[in-house]
Amino acid sequence: MPEGHTIHRLAARHRELFAGHVVTVDSPQGRFAAGAALITGRRLADTEAYGKHLFHHFDGERSLHVHLGLYGKFADGVPPVPEPVGQLRMRMVGGGHWLELRGPTACEVLDPGQVAVLRARLGQDPLRDDADPLVAYARVRASTKPVFALLLDQTVVAGCGLIYANEVLFRAGLAPTTEGSRISAACWQEIWDDLRALMKEGVARGRIDTVHTAHTPEAMQRAPRVDRHGGEVYVYRRPGQPCLVCGTAVQRGPMAGRNLYWCPACQP
Image (cartoon, rainbow, N blue to C red; front, side, top):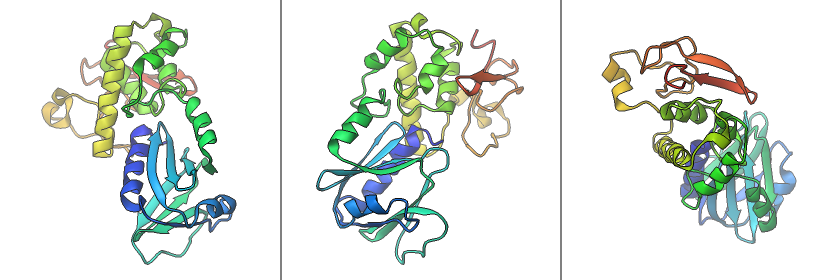
């Protein structure tokens, strides 16, 4: 599932292509036909990302809400608009560009009240300037759940996914099993600031890199990581391999229904 930095990149991309233009919207697949009819012919005023949720805000107080889930993906280009192929949920055309959406978990049109309700269910997004880490910390310190699970809880930290959760805890030298109630405000602020910086870099680069300069392939004279997710990381999907810092074998185990990776020496 795309992490929050990907959704923020999509929001910026769609704003660049379509904001300020009247667009036509349809649903070749038919599953979004009713929703498309509500926004086609309207001007796209702005786009917005909140955690893993993408919003297209149209004139007339209509907003397109998209959650890509595990299988959703966008494609865009310039005319001529290609003929629909396969299960094409939504197609948008305007401003000299086209946009296609396939396989999302959610693709729906909401009014302002419904958007507000959805946002109220989400936690704080580190990539948003209006985020308040103390609001997230209030939920963390009130919980006995492991901090790894809390980072993945979208009602606590919106947009943080599996890679960032594993990596930011390694960089903090914190055991993923540490209960939220045992984390100090200062420790949480350090985690938050590091997570925000890493995710901002992800927005800029379009991939997740979490290693410090001293641990890059060039600095360590090692082969670059080969993985479909790309990027250089410390523990994510490196079970059994030596920790880049201490050489201890990276461990893997289940937690919160996801794969947890950690170094038992660096994260005691």
